Image (cartoon, rainbow, N blue to C red; front, side):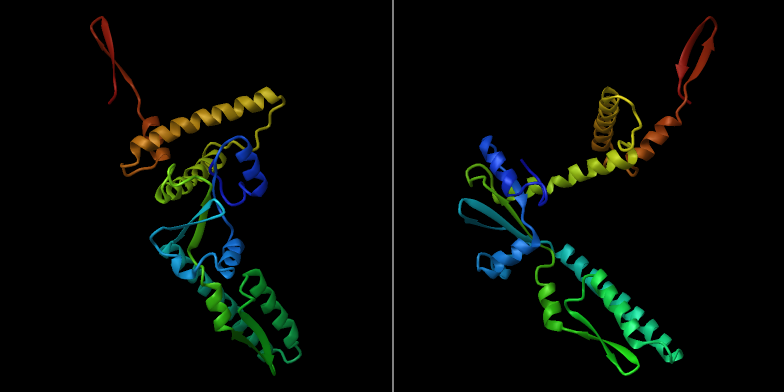
Length: 254
């Protein structure tokens, strides 16, 4: 059974094991931090190459995705830029409106830092009629310490599957996510206004059948320079022409 962090937890693992199945899942970022703090993991074990270790008959697969790390770092800086822009606007307003209260403007900036979840390393203080940001570089560095890092866990033995196989099977969940996006957007499985349970089941069955067709087309067309939707549109534009020769006829596609 392969599932993401939210699907396979302690209770589900117990149920899976009771049925003599095994599991592959991942642990949450707080769990990674706790195990790192407890000395189970070391930060330098997270690398682009897969690292594996075992604890209490559970295997942990550690990896750091450098591209994801860059993306998270970029997002963090974008959030800080957004707060700085808001701070600039508030300071301009305070300078032009002498009756405006500094604390009101400061609270709005603080609220934004909390919404963006950067308030742990960004402090908002007032200095006379101005608002300033104080960035705790050490806390910011700690926040970025596990950027791109993730840990997969499983009870499969080394004899059954290698670390690379376990990693690849977990990453295959991306195909499931793609399937659900296709169900909801392209095939519109949701919001079916039907009266009977049989009709609802029939609707879902037709959507599943359509998805199987879509998946087969994707498999055959993935090397071409168009999507499945574009390919179907092209096929829909084809028309047959009946050609009559004497007493006989034949079909042709122009």
